[in-house]
Image 1 (cartoon, rainbow, N blue to C red):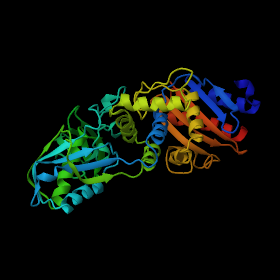
Image 2: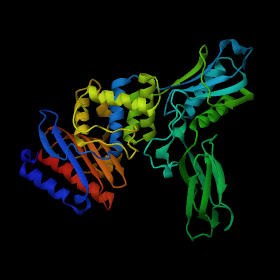
Image 3: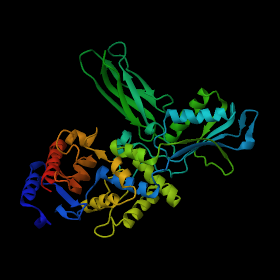
Image 4: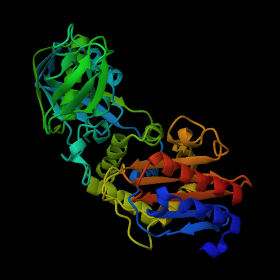
Length: 459
């Protein structure tokens, strides 16, 4: 629809798209006025692209629409009332998760304190670990599994703790040739260590590799760390995070004065009917967690949200059920009523199988601009004036106070979309997707920023 574009704007965007870093790539761009529906610029608006993290906008919008701004995630400790006698719980305690991605030590401690406050001083029987609110699939289809210990691939589980990530802390030994010293954090982490790394002579440099073996919580530390070097901290995703939660829960109960000498962990449990909730920990309201999701690009939060949509609205905490809720929302809001079909296989954009067109993203932005939760959605988005990916690129220029939205980057893939308030005061919905670029991502981002600046100045 280039005939609708002013010559100056066309020339500026055309020149940007002719830069070597982007000219051989596939590019899609759509900018449309939210005031009158006028197309400001359009290039490959219906072409499907790998959208990376912009998928999180769809998950966010569907969650606000389907769960609402007052929704809170929960974690509960339950027991049969008749099994509590004279301060002793005989028969076991049930730890049940409902998908809270934000559960931390403070929350675990509050749960334990509530159990102690209920008069329970001893538990004789299992600590049952119930993560059945979600299915048993921890990793998404199309994820890069050779990086499965990377924190961005944290396992999805109805019971999560510490964002399902623990730290490996490494310090040099006392003399060259000695093994490095290694421990894990936080307290109760599930990692075991195979230490192959040695201490190198001072001034010779360091070269450490830290990896978790597939399907295990065994960390292999290899390479070298020079004498006198500062400690090195490496974050890694944990295997079976529900057991990570359970171990943290046991420690918290003992800190609260509950005797667990005759208790043990039992996983894969399902909380039976008739139990009473002794303690409930609730998360912050959903919009605050969705803010973390979008501003920190927190992939785990996105996947937990999608599976929660499935569990709450379809009775199945799976990607299939959760994404069905997302698709229903997109159809109701006329985001996906025509054109090529949207392809979604996860909620974060980690999968290389996801496909979106610029038209889909612009329609989503238009739909949420008219939605009852529009102000919540706007406030959740990343702002160029705040710390984050947009600020690093646009925080010192004229777009600093004019753009809110979402970015995404993967090898040979880049995306940016959001609401742009132009210099003349018009509000635009903009989506720019690039696949298959070669060269430096920083150089590509500079070209993308030139396009956004042209829209801001000329539209």
